[in-house]
Length: 350
Image 1 (cartoon, helix red, strand yellow):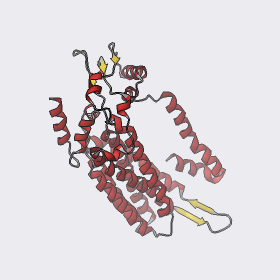
Image 2 (tube, one colour):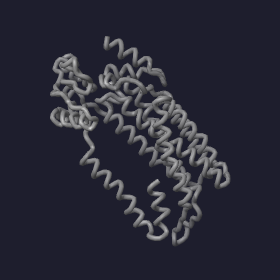
Image 3 (cartoon, rainbow, N blue to C red):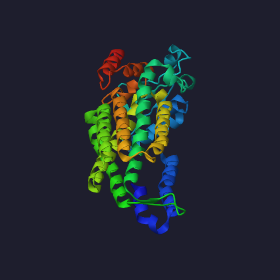
Image 4 (cartoon, rainbow, N blue to C red):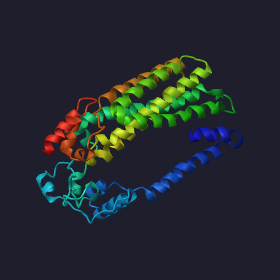
């Protein structure tokens, strides 16, 4: 949205160099402020043995929410550590309160397994059967949405190309930036819709429905419709893929335990970048628009099918999911259900 708006306002007057500088400013500022102000995960810090940093972040988070913390200390649960084999790369971190009269926000003791036991590798995401069952479809969703999200953006640019003379010495190309800007604005609607329905429909159904909606819309985009019709359909397609991919972003960290979350999410993002890297070779090619619409539509359908195979995490207790054994139970869910997880964690707590 920002890039297309700046291009619409400045490209014809100031050229691409000014456009590149202006679009780099938000990313640069965000990176600087993130390094300075974005807090680290307290659970991750505990797993790494950085106890004091974790305590400061817990206190700061409580203060933001208007809660005054009772005196507390974050300690390692040696009993938990001794009962778990050191060779287990997915050892868990559990939470215990030493004061039964305090609530969740004023727990006096939080326990963590040792740093050595908590380390995970890329191989563990495939080696451990329960994690593999969620990783494979999840990686497929990320790879496919990387391809389709950027594919739709590139497809819109192709449809709104007003002139192209790449074979001449001048190498000129121009676009209908006003229409591209309006199309990009639909992403705000996609974010809003996703936020409104993700807890009601659940993560799985939100992804499934909107990836399918994007599939239908992008297939219609390639059918040679009038400009006004293409604008409407492309808005629906881009809004839908944005809503679906937002749900994917939300569900991914919920599907992995604390010990596996960073590694698992990193692989997911890498899959999306591979999909995004591949997309231009298909969309900016000699294929006609009808073929591109069908290809992007099929990719969105595959993303919907892969998302449907994921466990549902809406309404589940993520504190229970931090235990590797409980997470393993959650990975055995039937697609789109939560009952198996709830039963497993309930039986363990009893």
